Picture 1 (cartoon, rainbow, N blue to C red):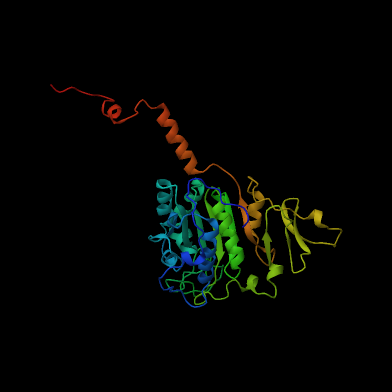
Picture 2: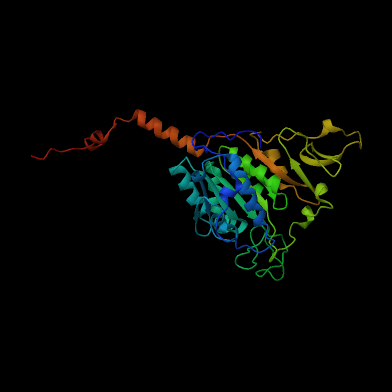
Length: 348
């Protein structure tokens, strides 16, 4: 987090802030051991580093365990209704560009009842930041399967195993023309803090998927990639401008072979570091980003970090440009012009 946040529309804090400045007096009512606690701490750490005035942060949420978040951060917040956080946050940001607007949502809240708002927020590229807590379950309503639950998952509403194919959030984001997608895990809080900083730096809609463990209704859903014994071999941390290497000894890498990704081992079959792809998060073409977002164990390592951060015009900027152009071309410059425009009559 060495580079400075550049956003001239949001006021910077004249004094240095600390994580304690963002700690709420409200009692945190998540289950002990819930991954949400780690996400909360990461946000408390990153907000002072981002450096905006405290009163210029606003959190908007929908419904679910994740959506209690605005109560637990000492900023402005809005607790909305199920699936509508994206619509509310869009209005907040467009009407007041000087607010750093963060959407807090879950996999059910955003991609089930809120699915339509989710894809159109991304398509419009409004300058907001969306954190999606993906625990592959409905936690607040006690364990029903969600749009990201694995095929065959046994839940309260699928006692014989779900027969629905799950969404891959990154695939959905890029399919909706997303300009920023990143993935973190609740057990790697430093990585999550770094990702949030990059999301804040991005001009446009940033979507951060956080793989988050629900200790009550879906405990251990991500053990296959979070266990310390094999985490390094089953995940890959992507960094812009660096080779895509992974493994405990950093001896495995990704390369493009004809029309798909493949894993290579350095030193085998003549493969060396020059055969490994270098990550380009800024590439406007989302093709490779999509392949990276879809990777999953056991065929590939799960990609973590910033997968895509491409620069495209934002809804906010285009709207301001349009308003300014119309103002310049309009014959109406004041209220008198408006009142005397069109069909007018003199009453004697």
